Each structure stands twice: as structure tokens, then as C-alpha cells.
Length: 224
Image (cartoon, rainbow, N blue to C red; front, side, top):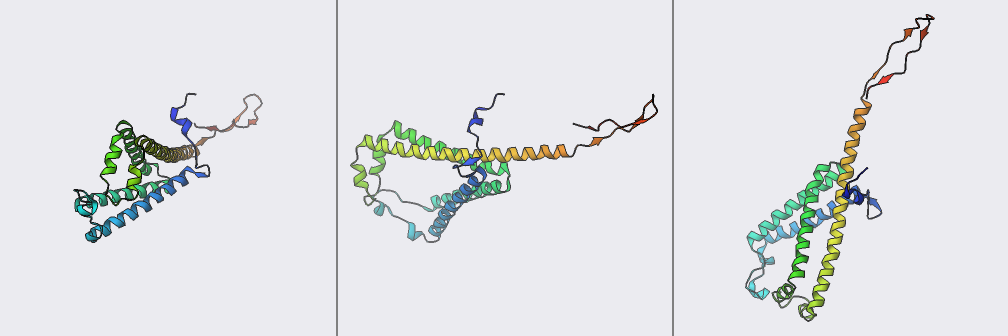
């Protein structure tokens, strides 16, 4: 039988030590904690703007670090991410495959953005130096990073992004395998339910027309 090309990547194990369902729950809880911490920081920044508001003089540039509009947008994104992560965790725990789809779509979107960043660094390596020049003068290790050979700096950044992409791809495969496992398990449960509720029809016994003796009825016929 011909199988789908994605079938070779299907596995029920995650990190070689736990089930993909357990791994998805752990991943969802981890993302939930991170986004909750970010949301608390954003809310505290909204309640006390002077504490997190950096002027252009402090940054050494002609822009402000974060205004109220950007803070509100970041807060809305954090709330949306908390909802998506909670749905994935609940879906993996209660074995509802549809609840995992939004988190899986977010992973694909995040992977695509990181891939675009890697492509932009590879095509336009000079953007790294331009970005470093825009950093504040008091940024940690700015001078040391600027003194590195531009080619070596591009190679290091591309290697770092490649490791991140490989790790994100593995997490995507774990969530996808969890979705397939739950979806297949639910479908098998439906088939078992249908099979166990089939009715059995017994044919009555009949007399032998030659000897006049009653013969045993034939074996029961079970409807398919």
C-alpha cells in the first residue's frame, strides 16, 4: 500500500522519553507561562508608564521605546497567545484534536517568520551592521560585537537561527503527531462503538424432512 509522505515522520514518542500528547501539554503550559509573564509586565507598564517609558535621549536615537498604542497591541497579542496556548493544553489533555489546530497554525507562522529572517540575513548581510549601529550606546557588548568580522558575524547568526529553526521544526512535528494521534484515536473509538452495537440474527431450528428429527440451527448470522 502507498502511504503519505508525511507518514514517515509520524511517531508517538516525544524527546525519546514521553508521549507526544504529554509533550504537547508540557509545551502548551510552557508557552502559557511565558505569555502570562509577558502580559503581567505589559499590564504593569500600562499602570505605571514612567517606569518603563524610555525617552529618545536615553536610547540615543530619535524614537521612543514603547508608546501607549504599541503597549495595547502587545497586550492584545499576549491575551490571544494565552488563549491559543490554553486551548492547545486543554485539547491535548481532553483529547480534542480541533483545539490543537490554532496552536499548530501559530507554530507554522512563527517558523515562517524566522525563516524569512534567516533569508534576509543571508541576502542582505549589511543589515546586521546597520541594526547594531542603531542600538543604544550603553547596550551590553555593543563595541565587542561591532569589532567582529562581518562575515564571521553573519555565519554565527545564521548558525544560531538554523539551530532555532531545527528546534522549532521538531516542536511542530511533535504537535502534529499529537493531533494525528488524538484524531486517529477518536476515529477508532467511533468504529469500535459501531461494531459493538451490531445486532445478531438467529435462524430458528427446523425438522429434518427425511428422519423427522430436529436439527441444530445453523450458526448465528451477524450483520456486517
